Amino acid sequence: MKSDASVFNKLISINLVLILFSLLLTFAVVSCDSESSDGDGGNIDNPTPTPSPSPTPGPTPSPTPSPTPSPTPAPTPDPGASIIEPGGTISTTAQTFDYVGNGNERQTLDFYAIQGLPSQSASTSSARGVLTGRPALVWFHGGGWVINDKTNIEPIAFEIAELGGFHLISVGYRLAGQGQDPWPGMIHEIKSAIRWLKLNSAELGIDPNFIITTGESAGAHLAAMIASSAGVAALEGSVNPGATSDVAGAVLFYGPYDLNTIVDQGIEVLITAGCGIELTPLPIWFLLDCPQPDDFFDLDPLSGCNQMDLTEASPVTHVDATDPPMFAASGTDDCFVPWLQVLDLDNALNTSNVPHEVSVTQGGEHDVETLNITAGQIITFIDQNIMH
Image 1 (cartoon, rainbow, N blue to C red):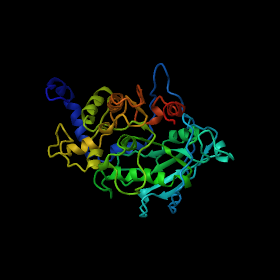
Image 2 (cartoon, one colour):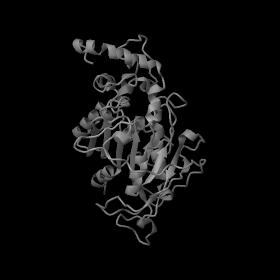
Image 3 (cartoon, rainbow, N blue to C red):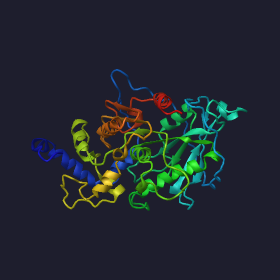
Image 4 (cartoon, rainbow, N blue to C red):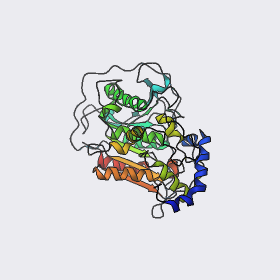
């Protein structure tokens, strides 16, 4: 909090002890990124809908050789045509590809194909000018950047892909502190996956102009970083040259978007939402390789982090008028990532006039099922904002 807010600091001193004590519980916080909760979050005027069942991902095959890029560009879609095409079925079995080519399972992606669309069986081009080149929804898993893998996919991702007629790709990445290159190595890695998809789009049946990133928690941070920082040289990396890392949009669930405000917001949420030991800056220490404070009761637990890294790793830093449309959802009872982070993103997008929609569910938690959103709502946003 601000240094002159002495009265407020006294009120939160007891709660700060809970936060700082939580630093000893290294993986308690991040493990909850993959757990479901039983909250009844919702809006009084618009009750939380019951999510419809989604296909369960099947077993992951062993990595297979990467397809060879084709030099033939896809036909140009008609201007203004919708990218939504219902009527298909998303595969429950994935093809696995090594997007780096070094045999590291963490650097592979799972491809769930959309099948049975009218345009995929037509003898002539559809209104968009393509037969099998469908948009792709690219998922990044949560877990505080330190746990989980590409099999951790929220059911809503399958629902969105099937409703829109999109291929679904889940990208694996090396975890922070576990073989990952120092910051910004993780961003370099995931951007190389986007470039790989574009280079191999013809063989995979992907429209390279319509790749939409998505993810929850730490995965939402990564998806937002890709969407907001296209062309930032320091964040691009050198793997898979020959394509750009820019994307057509982003769908984000309760991610951190401003690492410079997250600690103060965590204190505020601890008080207003009744959160306990869950709130902790520990994952950020791993992401940015920050030293832990010498003083256990340090009121600025990120003081040892490089300030330039904190700023560079914040998606809000890179937002400008060239960014693609973004949909972002959070809940006010999120005890892992302060929901106020989505307001920071909202402000940045508003300032740059980037088309976006923000959904905040009163009582919503760190779990998509507690948020007052549906796959249909997100498809509507995509249809209205992401088109030629």
